[in-house]
Length: 327
Image (cartoon, rainbow, N blue to C red; front, side, top):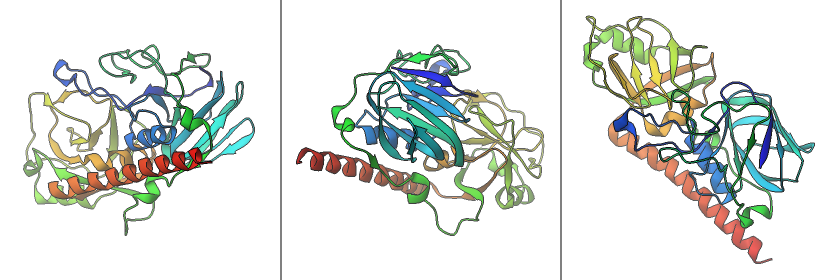
């Protein structure tokens, strides 16, 4: 087990999400950066859907209740366990009673702590993810607080042997020739795109969009020049998914994120491709997003690039385990 000693903001237990409840109006929840969560679980030999802790605010601190392997992925962080520095994207080991401290994030917006065996909270509607709006899942359906004690499943013995690190996704999957300091994500045009004239469309593509402090797991509210349709659009609420970019009456885009509601009525101008949602998740408040139009076939190819990265990680971890077994 682990004991939370310090947690700020919406720090929560998340797995890959619940995807079979949409027809009941229940959103997916799950890790905002699913690539980071998968990578951490792969490093530990866990099921890739094992629950970990999503940490969007530092400092964060916990105490290990037993000897345990763990990994920190996602944002680049400054962290230590028992006084020993821990790099990001690295499998490390803690001894009983040692304290893990994440002091700061120098790059990225969310760090993920995965533990050998995974966090063993109850499965609710097919997932261990925290659903804030419904107040269920995760640990008591709420953000983690000081004093919380979380159970962990039985560890994977192969992860307890030696430290191991991998290349961070944001470096391995970096896209060439992107503007420095901005996050450029690929999008596909959505249902109401043609309701915007060429001037509004150009504003959408050419502008840098600031991520406002009103952004969270429900949605990223952006700030920039107003992008308005040719005439006001009133639509009945209809199904939406994470990644959809809606334009409310004020002309400021909203990107639906992992805790998004399952329906909405604002016009949709575009949708962030699945392969780039983790990039959005790691974009910090106050930073700038830019949108790049892409085709459906290219969106599928981008997913293949992420799959190749994870496949290589799986293969490297298996090879490392085999080499350790030969000693």
